[in-house]
Length: 205
Image (spheres, rainbow, N blue to C red):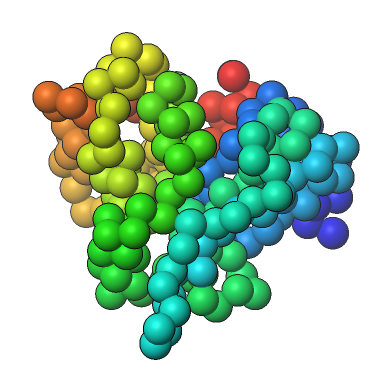
């Protein structure tokens, strides 16, 4: 039902995303609605995720997608922090994020194809809350990798819900914090801020 509603509404973010010619959707959400929307829209997506919670002698490994080279018609939906129904993939609580970062840095869980595309593409961050651990971890995972110098030549956008809609006491301080947080450093790319909802941005896009 949720997927049908997405497809029936031309202004729904998932409907617009499904129409974009993107080969990889880096999904920080745990649910599969984006995957299902892409499938209903006539594409052949593949869900990609890492079973990073290795137990005993098991060692977390990189995902092994069937499609080695994702294309617009056969995109990856890369569930960076896991997917519902696969408990060993989920990154949920604060300790999980620390453990996941350690596992990622030690074992390089991100696929080379994904890392290469990240370094050569304009990035669009959609739907993250101001204090979202998923965004903070994702951003650090990107900007601390080798090759980020090439990203400084590209345009990147962070679409943030207006702070007025958040439960923050000091809206202006939050705005200034986010804008300074996104400024490109020595090697980090500069990310422009769009103060509005993901739906508003995608409609303009």
